[in-house]
Image (tube, rainbow, N blue to C red; front, side, top):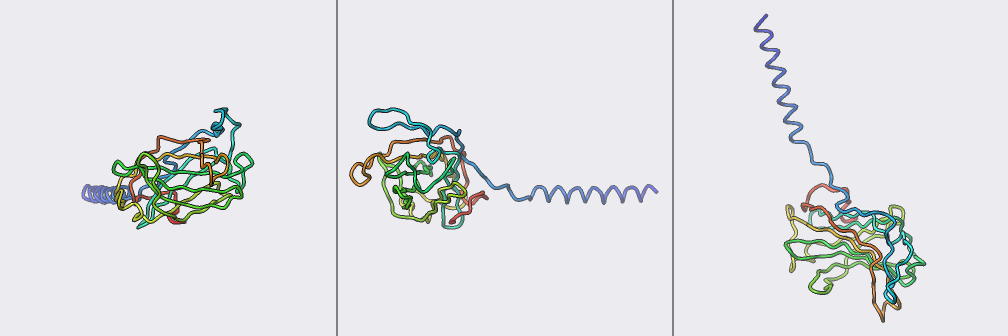
Length: 211
């Protein structure tokens, strides 16, 4: 009887070790909402007289993420609402996802004209924004998301991004154009979101990288 009890305890203990090992090897949960922001504060000033405007939900930032997979990096900017045209920004809007790699600030951006046609770009900050070229993106009205994707190689001269690289300080900007974009080019900010958590390149994310 004693021998049978010992064998039962041994088997139970072995099963416990196996179960524990399974838990230890469980896949990490996807990272999501690296940066968040309160709603209702897309009230940035007009450049001419610094007066604040009513909240513009199309420029009211809610959350954002940056993620990588293989040779691609994608930033997602989420807003309270997202329409292709915006009466509060008749000449267009701009959205930026800024992040730091190895001490260098990089960015992915989307610029919409007054009718909602979008162009996408990548670059870095060196006193002013320095463009590195056009990239791809999507304005997803249904999901209220601006998605911008670029090959990590576009940043190669400024920062190396590979699996394990720390992508830090994600912050977002939503801006409206004032006046003629081709002549004035002024983009006062309507909202920003700061304090983003660190993301490790290659880690699971809620972002569908490259889409």
